[in-house]
Image (cartoon, rainbow, N blue to C red; front, top):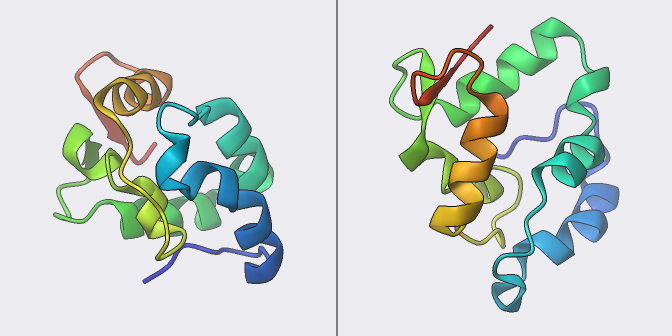
Length: 104
């Protein structure tokens, strides 16, 4: 399933094109991404919905391997993140330093 909680899919797709282009390697900026998808403005319930969609193995955590494919969770044209981009995104969301992102 695609993650599009309270966002117009057409608007999202237009904004998203810079992140999803295969030629845009190393262009992913997690701060711009979070701003674009508006997660900071979402209710805790909406954030948890997004979390559960991205937590592919249902472990209760989003691990590095799951983050690598986060853009594909938002659009079928999404590209895989590079290792560098994945590690930066993980570091931004890993509040306790255990190498994974929890639901809270």
